[in-house]
Length: 286
Image (cartoon, rainbow, N blue to C red; front, side, top):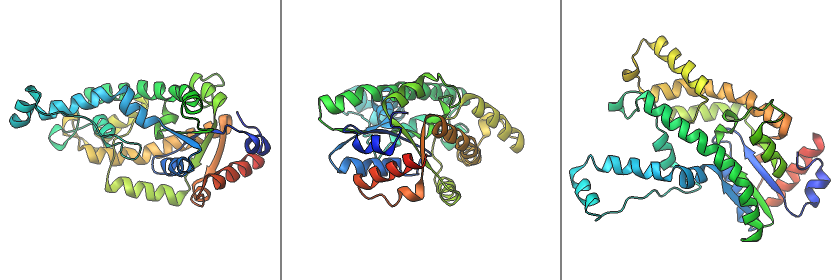
């Protein structure tokens, strides 16, 4: 672990953290607070995925849909219109739209084979984007002159690492550079996240084995063929299982590679100083 005591953290002139946890627990909100201090460089893993690694796939998907419309197709083929993704740190919709949900095509779903292909693309992009954080630490100080660095990771980080493997190549490299901080969701927050997801189900990345097991289980339970699966119903059904699947993996990352901070404590953070003090107390308690 990069910082082993509160004193070491407080005295460090170059603080570096990686925030991880379920989507919606406050990683980006906290990163925005730190960035507002003008002392912290904000690196978003999902933004890096959606621009550097999957940007072309996302825009090609937009173009493919545009070509279905005769009016837009004519203008696109004559270079009269330009299609681009307006992805931002706070709006990752273009990436989510591309990942999609498996199921009935007429209900906005993807054929399972295409969905799995896109899942693999996301996996490889997330690995690369996480490892890229190390070069952005250097850029943050050498080019932009930010003393501190926050890596705002995606909720699926726990799906692409082996938390109990001492030589996991991703966690080893990340923990050498940054303090890994799990924003831990209590039962009340998890219930709110589930309610929010039920109202507006979002595309997610899943471990291949987890996805296959639950795809088959859902189809068996509902006696439905692949092409007749309701994409949103499946997304809601698997989400609760994904939450249960991810919590122990997050906990293991925190236990073996970093620290955990309760989301309710984090909700009291209003400044970079508040965050520094909270991390110091957490390191002391550890």
